[in-house]
Length: 157
Image 1 (cartoon, rainbow, N blue to C red):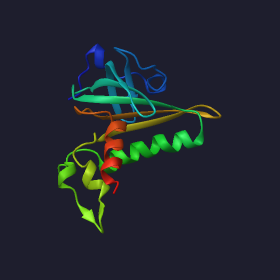
Image 2: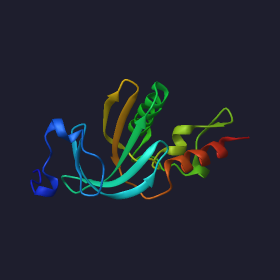
Image 3: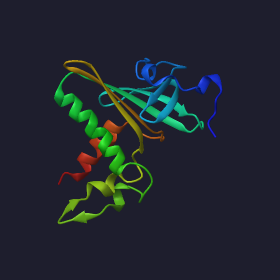
Image 4: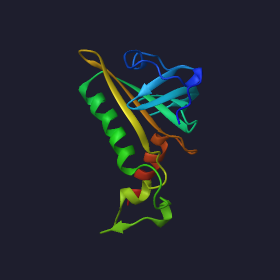
């Protein structure tokens, strides 16, 4: 059942993608309607917001403004990583990783440590500017950038 209270009423498809992220905003990302709660901080490419879906499940919404094709590809790759590696799985404890030919397996480092991608939406704002929004499960822990830096350091000889 979908919660139809005013705070969660989905905006029309045309306006849902135009709404700026701010406290109380109701936005649609892919097929997911989210109510933005508060800012969480800055991520690798953009702002991250606490949000919830219509079932009141905790989410994080990341908005990435891309000013080049390279930025766009990086943002879409981040979504791909979250879809591929995020969520529940084998604990990614750095001391219990898989090592193949002396090299730690990256997937074993991140399993259980990354949020899962719930939805993704892209919008071209101008000829050379895009906005990517990622809705993901919200997990406690360190920012993704810090986690990746720690993984890189642990993989060095």
